[in-house]
Image (cartoon, rainbow, N blue to C red; front, top):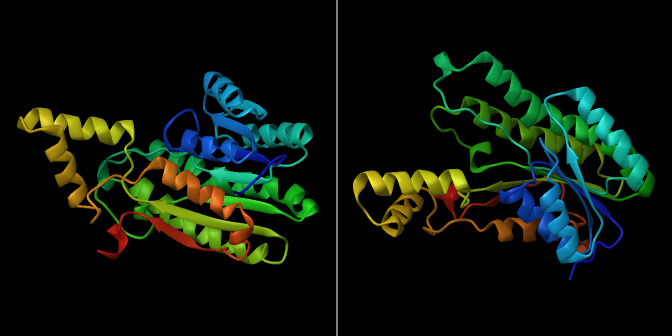
Length: 259
């Protein structure tokens, strides 16, 4: 089993859902955790600490503000020595056709989904390089490689993350640091589960039938991508077997990207 005892991992957007699952996976492998969200996830941090016996810091920071990111990273490096593992998971999205898309929502998406990972990476790299080891994992999406209607902010920023990953991987290739992107398909997030429940309610059909149809239009497996499986891939990328995996875009989508 991969052991990361003594290493510090920062996971953004980690109050619940995929971010929390990734934090749980890393904590289970022995890593200390910085659990970030817009509001400091103190309860989730307490739960992690109690369950896994690792050190946990709860950080509440608005990732659309560069000065807030810089202040957080300065504090964390001072307290932890380094952020050894950085998981850029936080994301915002808005659903709208392009011509009606609110410009302020576009600016927010660029800031949180793209600029924040850039700033976090540039601020984490010096200590990683000093230690000769680091893992940067950017959370992409199936929509990193294809488009969908009414989500130009999400499609654009998740596509750009692939370029950022490649650039960082090349610059860090001889430093003991790797940088990769994970591209999940449909996860059982509250938003997706609510959407399916609404469709089922409006059509008078069983939720299981609607779920199978919804996923069948996307993932050939006709099942959700498990959050724990994505977390396990993060842990794998932090282990010695992944020392030579860098600059990669790894799909976890039940065959959606090849269908």
